[in-house]
Amino acid sequence: MAEEIKKTDIIGEVVEKHEKLAPIFFKFGMHCIGCPAARGESIEDGAKAHGLDDEKIKALIKDLNEELAKE
Image 1 (cartoon, rainbow, N blue to C red):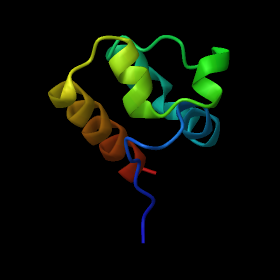
Image 2: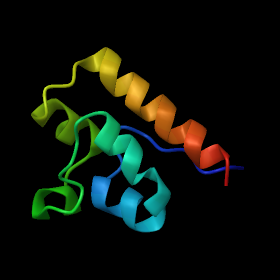
Image 3: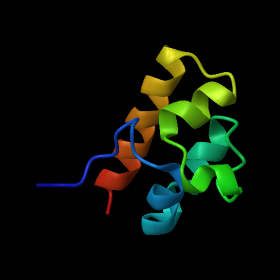
Image 4: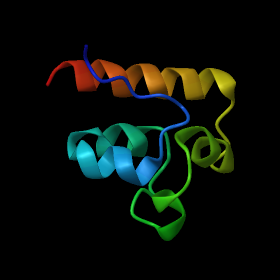
């Protein structure tokens, strides 16, 4: 079964494991993937801290998983 990114996943862990996903975070205005908070913050919490609403968070997760599926 292929890996799937969830909104509860930790930003830093996702980017560390899948560096190619970083531009997708940037696309959604999340340029802090290397900051200390990202090391322990979920994608959902980080996205909300950057002003993303639930629909944009769903779009972010969708885009992350589509890119991940290309591996």
